[in-house]
Image (cartoon, rainbow, N blue to C red; front, side, top):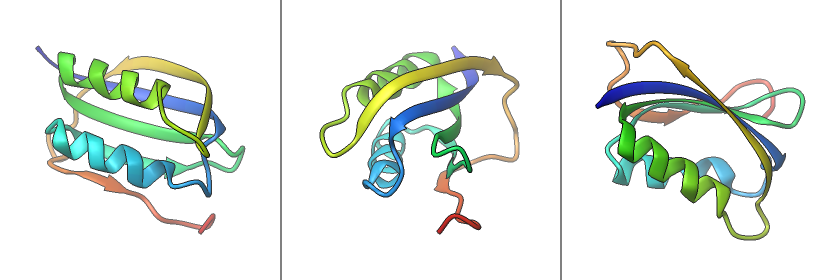
Length: 95
């Protein structure tokens, strides 16, 4: 079943290669969306695709290896965005 989720990841997830790690796995799982750093040192992710693959990505995030340290994940279902076709990293003021 096709669905979309918004994730907020807390822990040591900035400046440790986390976004690249998620990008690689999201693309392998044929998911679309975006990942970006937030001002509070968390990372937000919008992801859409097959529900089973979103769940696999969440499990991969939960089990990320050092130096990444995921302390918690907040997941909310959201509305898919038809215009989102690929998974990308958003770069901005925090870079």
